[in-house]
Amino acid sequence: MTTWDDQGRPEPPGAGTEVETLLGFLDFQRATLAWKTAGVGADGLRARLVASPISLGGVLKHLAWVEYFWLSYNLHAHEEQPPWAAVNWSTDGDWPWESAADDSPEELTALWEHWVARGRELTAAALATGGLDQLSGRPWPDREGPTLRWIVVHLIEEYARHLGHADLLREAYDGVTGD
Image (cartoon, rainbow, N blue to C red; front, side, top):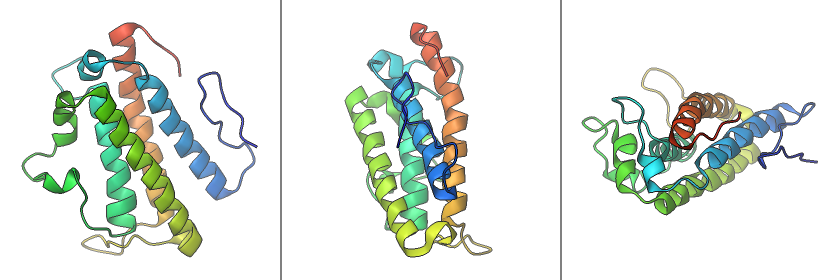
């Protein structure tokens, strides 16, 4: 049974299996980003604190790309998908961060929600066929690719890192705080 906190985030299980615990923490991180960006208009999603492309909208777009890149492109070795396929990553590595300023709040939220939903589907498929030991369909240049376990932990790390940015950006924009 899932319990929910005051912000509507699912609490990770205190005594779950490895899969339940990992996915519980990942879903908690995802729900935290949804909470931190909820109700913020275009100006708030574009706001920056320093000479950096990081904004709340950029966090949404970057984490949509992270979900896509690790779960679709790498884990399942799917072909490149829009909008990511059109990016020249060698010359425009900050594209998700910088291009987010051109997107509406609805577009950014829909893009992130799409890749989170797709990420959940792809994770469930990998768990059904290979469990957490399922290897990525795209090997790294010098060795086999990571396992699903590594990918899920990496997703948690990505969210945790960028939720720190989201905390600061949201508080600076409209004073909303909370963990």
